[in-house]
Image (tube, rainbow over all chains, first blue to last red; front, side, top):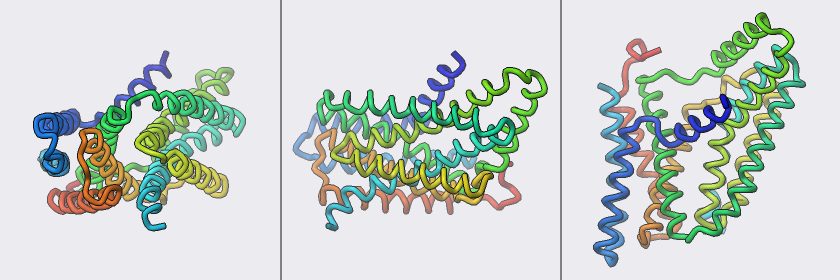
Length: 67
Length: 250
């Protein structure tokens, strides 16, 4: 039981360390998904949202951690 | 040849470096167990852990063939983003002195002390406890390696380079551990985490985009461009938040 709970904790910990960063990444992907669904012919806009959104989320998260 | 390397190279390098980090952490605990109770429980626990990990890959790998490619790319892409950016964030904060660096020597000392304390309390059960400690270390550290291998191979025909990178790293660490017979404290873990975080985040962006139907300019070469962008932002972030050494948390 101890090992099973350790494995489950480890599995969750693989993806979520700072909950806010995980939420921000999911939000960026959600916005990109909505844009790709609404404007399928503008796939580069979806790509740009993903790239800029993820890089921005990382930068903002690190700045927050400094405070 | 060049296009083969841009296709296979990043996956092989990412799994090699990530596995190097995880294998060093697992080896540290296995060595601590071996120091206190000998190689038998340490080795048996480690082998049992490796068998469970192999079973997970063998069971999960083929199941992924039944998932539609775009859905698989999107899911794996998001998971790689979460996983890679988590590593990168931690590596940035460690480089900047906001959080303490991982110390294998300290981990080795702590694990050894805990086993010695248990040795004092319950002598008879100790081989069993030591074996479990070794098993848990290999299994838990190995889960990250398994995820990276499965994730990187799920987006295309990358199972061979991904698995090769992971196996090469584990073999290298096992040989070094056997030669040194002590924790591999000189491995620049944070630099490796920095590099792996960048590569996995770049893969994550690429496959999330592929899953959403993005037609990336330059196809696979876009991964290298994303990695360069993540590197630029990560270096900027370190410079932006860097603390003087004396001010850093311990």
